Image (tube, rainbow, N blue to C red; front, top):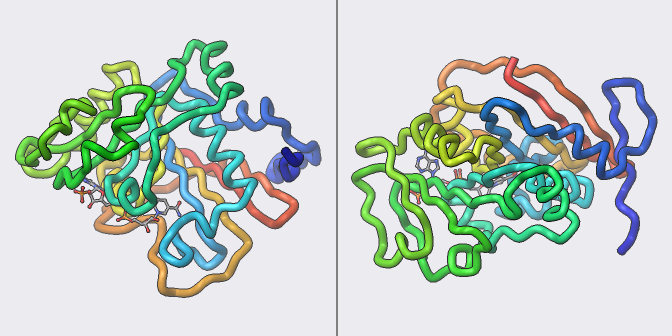
Length: 247
Ligand SMILES: NC(=O)c1ccc[n+]([C@@H]2O[C@H](COP(=O)([O-])OP(=O)(O)OC[C@H]3O[C@@H](n4cnc5c(N)ncnc54)[C@H](OP(=O)(O)O)[C@@H]3O)[C@@H](O)[C@H]2O)c1
């Protein structure tokens, strides 16, 4: 395997290349429950290239993405992104599983899918091949397809809309306090509207694309939410990796 592209921290005047341990320390687990959002965008703010995030995500983004998955208890994703991006069962390589064992974290993160309509296929490998039983977060009026409860825990919060605050609180009670949300934009909008977002990790890829794509947030979001810069990383190819936390 070729060496990873060097990543350096820009905001502290440091010039050192960050190894995996130094990178991991920059995405800490926190004592209190914490929701981290992770997105990639182009320089002009596009959330997709040709309809998918893949074209925006270079090696530095994938590397840090892997670190964020390594340190989380649960990986939260909107059903739209799960279906569109064709999510597979969340597996981690031996190095990341070893880190989790050494740090007292369950070997695999739990996949949590947020869905209003439960348009989900219980036979999909993302469920049937999952190393740990996934969770579906929905509301009481949603009709589940046959067999969904065989492959996932279906948690219901809210009468006709998902009560995200109550849903996340149940995840915390289950011991899933370090949440990594990989989108998509509508879920990010709902979480922002409910003021549940503690952190945004945003990779800016050095690409100019087109105005056709959406942005990282969609739907009603309520008032602007100020965020505070925690760090900026730069890769040799011009990729920037920003981390902002709730101010
Ligand atoms: N650049 C990036 O980092 C990035 C990251 C993620 C996604 N994307 C892109 O974003 C696009 C998808 O955008 P999207 O906004 O449709 O994604 P999304 O938010 O994942 O999907 C919307 C769907 O997710 C469920 N959902 C979202 N918020 C919900 C809420 N508050 N309550 C209940 N269910 C909720 C619903 O599923 P049901 O229909 O099942 O009810 C809804 O129809 C894709 O093109 C994907 O490639 C890009």
